[in-house]
Length: 387
Ligand SMILES: Cc1cc2nc3c(=O)[nH]c(=O)nc-3n(C[C@H](O)[C@H](O)[C@H](O)COP(=O)(O)O)c2cc1C
Image (cartoon, rainbow, N blue to C red):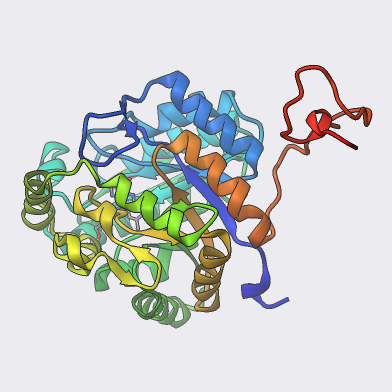
């Protein structure tokens, strides 16, 4: 079957810096805590998501530790966890990754985050200019990959020295957990062609995503490699298109112009990330140009850095839009919605049947077929009348 006919690999998101029902407002804001993250992970595990992305930033819980906790509370779910070159040595990261892969019996996926926020990078002791961060990342992953694949590494690099490094315990997955990576600069595309298994993009319109896919594909093929592709998107799904657009409006209904301009200042001035700038340019902080491509709404990006667009619509509409991304080579979706627990159910219940995905836990038999049981109310199963 052509790659675009295969069901999408569909992951969800752990909001490890906190959650809420409205953007840019304290109303119904929901601080994250370990039990809440477990609730989301357990919901994702049973609903049929293949994994969850755990983000990394100074505002988030530490991603390896959180993933280790969530792995103990789930059965199938995979964890896409960030490796940030420069924040620790490749040998130390190799030990973290190997142990987490072993503890979870092969449920670790790695997300390479080179970073673009100057303040955060400086706080971590990283002062390299943009493109040099990718040279550094190359040396980092030469050591990291070699340790995970062979147990040994030795490098006298420009940025990294690792002498006779050893890893005693190999990861569960062979040759090692797969490397995912999302960045949009030319240096990043070359790096992706050389090192990563899956290239990720934030939710830009299909034509812009297609350009990046082509660039990464070209870089990979020049090295005799193949890379696969994923997209990170929010979802605002309701039974009808009208209801979905009303939900999108509601999500930013408590967002002030002042909050938007403060967030836009940060996105513009504190980051040298090409990916972030591409997302910002889609809307330029303006409320009146948020549908940046059919059913692709940039309202989230008014205040949130990084993933700033949502697919908005009924299940049939959103499935059709996803199909457009599949046709240009996307095989993986990393999804989210506010709040993340409720919307994990909404997306799975409304969208998964449209795109050929099934819950991981088959439903229990609802009844022996009795027509009406006391307390039934018309929701299905033993609550049906007249069966
Ligand atoms: C799907 C996806 C997930 C990302 N996750 C994170 C993250 O958790 N933390 C972070 O600081 N940056 C994250 N990034 C940002 C990139 O890793 C990268 O640092 C940034 O885009 C700068 O690269 P560029 O200038 O080459 O675009 C993510 C990007 C994508 C596409």
